Length: 308
Image (cartoon, rainbow, N blue to C red; front, top):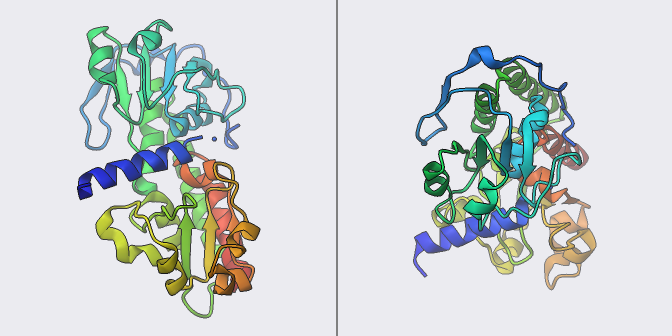
């Protein structure tokens, strides 16, 4: 398998495992008249400009992270349907729509005036364009700044620009506060972020990896960054690196826990295991670049504080 295909396979695996997650930053329902901001043109990073002539009233979200963003900025009342993995917030109109194998006819049958996706599969974009349905593709954020920008972009696309900009600023400030209040360890700490029990992880060149970096943590997978932002490490590599902290982002998908990690052959002697440094995360919170990234930062900060 070529490096490109390995990277694509890894990214798809990360998506399937990660994008399974009520926003904690919900805003009031949209005001009756938000139409004065339209027409509006929005341009995702690396994407094509999209012009919306009127405020969308029937939005379909095929991205769990974007679903959380939409509700957090007050656009939840405009959401007509979400994909089957968009399990947060609870009131989101969840359907059997599949973001990985989207059915253009099934989506169009719900009469959307805007479709938000993070992945263009099964000719989703071209198929909906033929039906004159606007599609906004917001890929997985590679950094916190990209996550904040997606919040603001969704705000402009839905008529909630002020609410979205306010939320983005709040998220940035809250994360900075968590970092500032977390005691700095006496020595640099290392970590392993487990996406799946077969060794898939992430590097510092991801939005989650950037959160860890804010706390001064060193990623043991960065040496494997040539394999892409989501490399696979062997058990031997993890054992040799002997990280101070292990963060489990596979507690829901794969039923992993500090106990299962300690029971793995050779893992019981790791510093993270012996020092109670194996941290069970919520898979969704740890993998979505939406408003709950603050909760993820708090979990990391708590772990660093205990290891201090």
